[in-house]
Amino acid sequence: MNFHQFIDLIANHNVTDEQIENELCENHFYLTDIQEDLADDVDEIILIETKRRKCSVIHAKSGTQGFPCVQTGTKKVLYILQGKIQYSEYVCDAFTLTNTKKEIASVGEVIIVNPGVIHKVAAYDAKAIVLTVSLSNVDYDDTRIFNHSFKIFEDNSKLPDYYYGYDERYQKVYAEGADLWETDQPNEPLIQFVERYLVEGKRVIDLGCGEGRDSVYLVSQGYDVYGVDVSRAALEKARMRARQLNLNCKFIERDVVYLRNIKNESFDAAINMGCLHMMPDPVHRKQHLERVFQILKPGGYFLVAHCRGEWLKGFFSVPNYEEAGPAVPGRIINRRIRVKGGTKMIPLPLVPFKESSEEELKRELAASGFKVVDSLSENTDAFGNTAVLLAQKP
Ligand SMILES: C[S@@+](CC[C@H](N)C(=O)[O-])C[C@H]1O[C@@H](n2cnc3c(N)ncnc32)[C@H](O)[C@@H]1O
Image 1: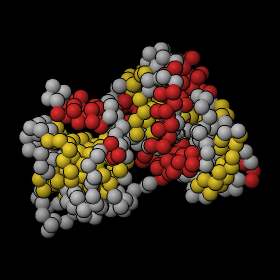
Image 2 (image 1 turned 180 degrees about the vertical axis):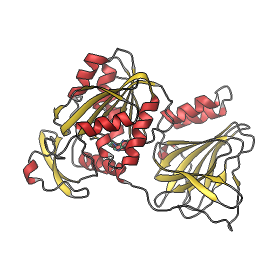
Image 3 (image 1 turned 45 degrees about the vertical axis):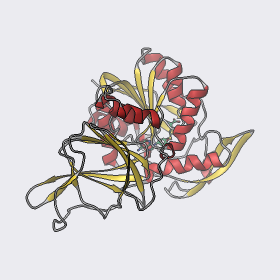
Image 4 (image 1 turned 90 degrees about the horizontal axis):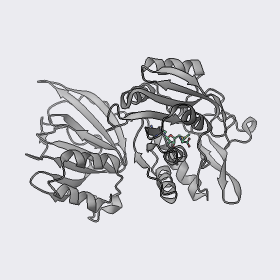
């Protein structure tokens, strides 16, 4: 769906609020789709306003400006069009405002603000542009709930930004002439999983799908697939490949830590092929595993491929492991990338990672409620010394 079709939906009152919310969650919109020019000194442009709904584009103020607002009688959906936002929620008593939730959301992500929620939307970096849709309006203005004399207990320290490091690396390898960073073939253990465990027609989510090699394979085998990643560049490749192969696969830009706006118990299987090991923060790992558990149906499978140790050893992109030097995040090392007619060494920074033994990974999965049912561990070209575990939601 393009942006103009979306605006038509908003105008059409036969279309339910829930349908609009779903379209926002499952589509990708671009700032360039919106013809109105949002100059830097303009806070908001209203794109459409009806009796029940309002859709506008806003500049999110920087983190230190602005105050929390209470969402009045309507539900508001925020779709990030450019930059990143820090979204915070609060509870308030007579004298204090306590921060209860703080998340970073990036381009393509959707945040839903329910009526009555005290919240603040701030630009995480210099600038962020957000599409806001207020549904079932009775009064769509935010109401400020306190004045400047209140003290805001907010920790403004920057949250980790490294998940988005991948996007820059994808962009760099494409700019250097690579068609893809990875091979276009699916991960080998996934094929084994599908052949042994997965009944045709099931709904699968590919977490950290990158350029979509596994998602596309799963669709070709008759599954209903959603690929999720934070990298817009990789997702564009994935969408292009699905189009070329005439395969219907949804690719959504979203952080797999929170898996925002994905319904609980809505998938038969989830796969995480080399994405969990890109999350070193134990809090984020736990949050991710718990969300995966929630979105799976009872009996649903979770296939995880995770580096066991000696990061970079056995990676296709690191042919000379002995000479690569220490795997320290931020260090630039030459990576072997496939380009037309062969391969090319491209200097790229290492992003943070986490190694886990199979036992450690089993414990982590069990702590989130999963039962480990099989081990498909093997060395793969992509991730080197990899533990591949199959877990199940009881
Ligand atoms: C090693 S690649 C694997 C890609 C793909 N699964 C494959 O096998 O080709 C890891 C992927 O995880 C994505 N990623 C890392 N952190 C993420 C996060 N918090 N949310 C969503 N995707 C993330 C990266 O953008 C990258 O595409």
